[in-house]
Image 1 (tube, rainbow, N blue to C red):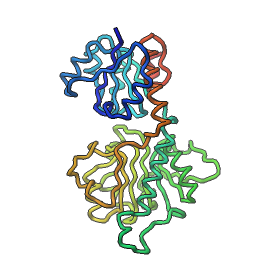
Image 2: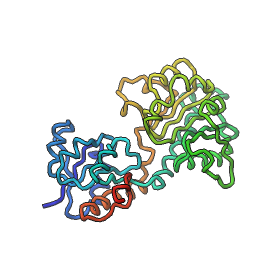
Image 3: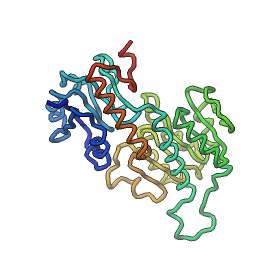
Image 4: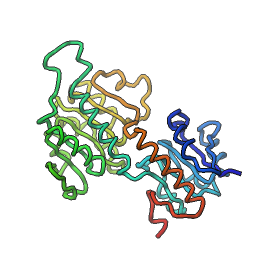
Length: 317
């Protein structure tokens, strides 16, 4: 009988993900979906699962406890804020994920794409106004978070001859080669200086609601916000108000809160908001590598071998 991998996220049913899952699923394993994605049905299906996987839907301690044969949980992505990592660690269950460097390049490229769209303002092209565009050269970008993605954005922005500022909790650790990054001691110091604010930091309790009415009021009315990390970094209602009131010029969002946005959400109606459905890392190269790694991690865990790419390596201490 095949080992059961329970997929608890309806996103796994889309055609692209199905292609990768079929391509890299190891022999002797099968993917199972609950009849519905309601709590009771998921818990019922977990009873004979050796692995639980998700994209953005939660993997909870309750799901883990409902699966007596569980060997691993995970996702074909890097951020694990939707997984109860503490609960998995307490149960010695590896949380398999993709290493940050694997997915950082396309996300940094996507951030630049959103910046370029906001700079070129296609929603105004029909007016043929000769003062439509913001020039990237000489403009200031402020990056919050200098991990792999933030550093990738800094490198690419420098290639456009932009002035690069950053605020990060690991101040002074990034040593750029061939360009300069001005790190600010506080976010408040950086906000009034930038033409583009780019969020690339992981979601933590401290970073939730990082950008609210107060921070948006500190930005230039000509500045734009770009978020390619996690939606809850931004207080959505405050962003809507800032855009309506002209406190900032625009927003480029690959992630939102809630996600996905309701069809009638105000952000969908604003011409100066560029939305993409959390697909910044979705290149063929990255998705292939991520799904290959995820299913290899599942195979290793079931065979009793060490999972190499995981969010809680302390389980092997």
